[in-house]
Image (cartoon, rainbow, N blue to C red):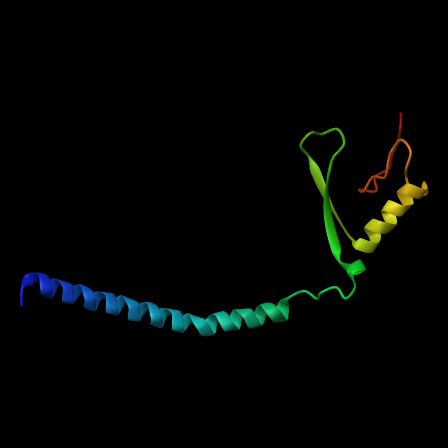
Length: 108
């Protein structure tokens, strides 16, 4: 058998071993992934039954700063109620506007 033929046979055999090892490693990890998926489904947060109960987070820019922001999370129902209050003038409209932080507004 020429040297080139034995080299190719050795290379083919090595590829078979690498392929078999890859399959074994993949098969060994499959049960672990199934267990992780099971835990995630058990620990998953409850889904809101109503679209109005879904939590929406919005990011606002702090007044007086070009960079600083804050995040406020409310349900869709709360965002809608706040928007309606501002439009009807029942909220903290006027010079202060409807601040999502709920901070006291004082005009000097």
